[in-house]
Image (tube, rainbow, N blue to C red; front, side):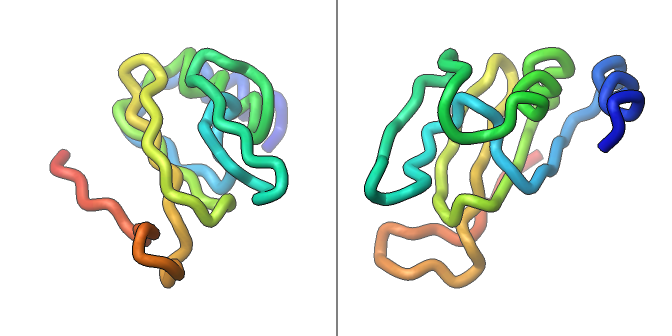
Length: 102
């Protein structure tokens, strides 16, 4: 995405943000050998800083991301953020989709 497009998005209002990567501050394990959970206020670690900036500035109702093959829900202000697992997760504690009433 170009800087101009990103700056234009920062001035928009939208209800749903769908991205590949998660925003910085998402509690991701990432590399199993280096599991580290973050608080939503922490601006370090795994994830993408520009996505977090979009969420913090625009405050969509929902944000969804994938990439990490994990399942998490995090609240960033008014935004409910969901990291969605792969479509066929292994293990009994894995979820592969979310059903939301909008």
